[in-house]
Structures are given as C-alpha cells and as structure tokens.
Length: 159
Image (spheres, rainbow, N blue to C red):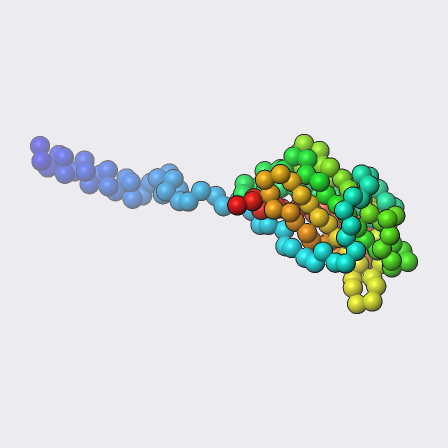
C-alpha cells in the first residue's frame, strides 16, 4: 500500500509540474495597459469657465476616451477643458472650449489646427477633472501631416 501511495504522490507531483493550466493559474493577473497620461505645463493662458461646446473651428479632430489608470475603465462624464492659440498665434476666447464626456468617457473636439509660435510646436492644452481622480493638465502636440488624432486621457485616482 505504501508503494501505491508513493506512486500516486509521484504521479500527482509530476502532473502538477508539467501542467500548463496550473502554471498559468499561478502567474500574476494580467497587468492593465493604461499608463497615466503624462502631465505637461498649464501655460499662462488657462482661464476657468470655458464655454461648453465641441467645436471652435474645423480641419482638426481630436477624440478619445477618458480612462482610469487603476483598471482602464472608462470614466463617465468628466469635464475636459481645451485652450489653444488661434490662426493668428494668439490665445483668445474663440479658441476655448469645455466638454462633458458621455457616460462612456468618450469625447470629440473639432478645431482649427493651431499654429506653431515663437519656439512652441502646434499644441492644444487639455485639463481633465472628474470626481475621485487627480486633475490632469497636459498638452496634445499635433503632427504636421495629421488632420485628426485619437488620444485617450488616463487619470490617476485620488489617494
């Protein structure tokens, strides 16, 4: 009987060692792919209270989803504020907008492509705020040949 139990134990150990199911079950959970969006300068031209609108021009479309860095889930209804230089390279109310995303965190913003000015490449300033998350201030840098970009904005949770 001891020999039989020893053989069963050996068989169980070998099965466990060679079992791909057990090996994969012991591996850590899949790590999500939502790294927080890199912060960037606010710049001197931010002003709160931008008008709610999804369009301040035409020719460039910026869209995406606001997500949580904790689990990649969409963040429902955050406030996104945009400001940029107009075609004359000056900041004005004409190029300020605010959007409240849909319940799936999706946004769509249409604008004129901002020009480069002084030493700055073309860019759009973005500020995202949502309950339970750190406010994100970043910038989207346009590529000269592009007329649109899809940019997910990933927020860190408040501690």
